[in-house]
Image (cartoon, rainbow, N blue to C red; front, side, top):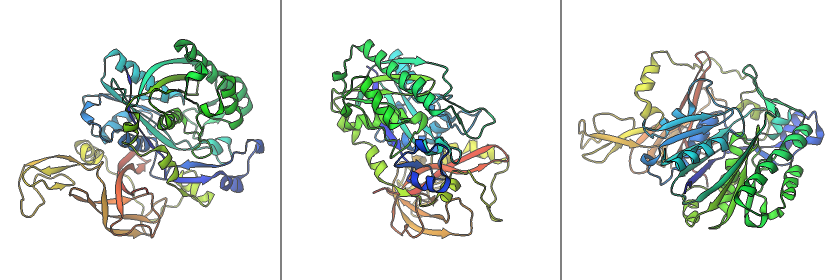
Length: 483
């Protein structure tokens, strides 16, 4: 049986209380006021980097050689023409003998990618496929989207071993319903009148998909432990559950008040949330929204608790946060307003460096160094000569990955002269557990919080954007371990 082998999430560290945005902007439609907070990607986070970090959590303890493919779903892909799934696979050091594909065009793309992976496994064309979904959508200041959208990512490893949950079936409905859209020349997406969206689309398509699934599988409301679906409005969200004959405790918490609408990743994050509460044998239904709806049913496996312990929980990620105190910092991180970069900010690399980036892709994107086969000393970056002064073996190095290794800060600097959208720039030497040392930027930390000995782990982030040449550059940074 095809199913879920493991899962992981990435939730940005920053949050902003919606009242902070309201006090700065006000709203054209006061009736749409939402309580709570939403997640905010840091300046060096985008959909691709968040997907890599969710995947790292998902693949914890998994032999990467068993992964046959990577599917990536997002409506905020960094490139219009360059496959993001291939970049993710390189960052995860999965090798080249895998299939990769991007899914986009609708917030239903997350479940579309998940269904495609399940179909491939069931058909026998793949043993396991990693499905990543992430979005970091920017709403126009003062818009309903700014109020609604949050940032986040989820990763699901689909395979024949349904350790976490077995796949029971799915039902889809597809409609060209233009609730929101974004043309090539748009910076922000556009939204149809919200009541029209709720009454003619949202409250009809999701029940239709879930009811169709229940009919296919012969499920009654009492057969399901939890049902999750995206939320556009808390009142209508509860109303859908009542229409389906569900008790309030059967409806999965929508997370809109602590997370926000994370686009393509939203239903997959809700699926992770449901699996974290599921007991073996429980049926869990998850539905998506966007140009229709997909509804999928999974049954929690006997080893769900074991799988649950392999990754940091969604609850822990949601609880580990820092609040943004002002709106100016928020729009600066989202690159919505222009910020002076100063004379020291020189970005962009010469064209000839593209060849070097290709040749050293495992080192740069995969953070793969080397380990001496003679003395066992790890080092980054890789070199043919062992750095151990007592060894100095030549041409006896084997690949050694650092992306999944923790370490501690050996030394650090807070730089107030170099430009960063979240000053100051903090960087320093990191000593890795098991050996190896490297100089890395630190992120998701405030001045004065980093000390010598601070435990850190690696996170995949944007290094910078070269707008003159249309390139995104990614690398690994160190982040203090969340408590």
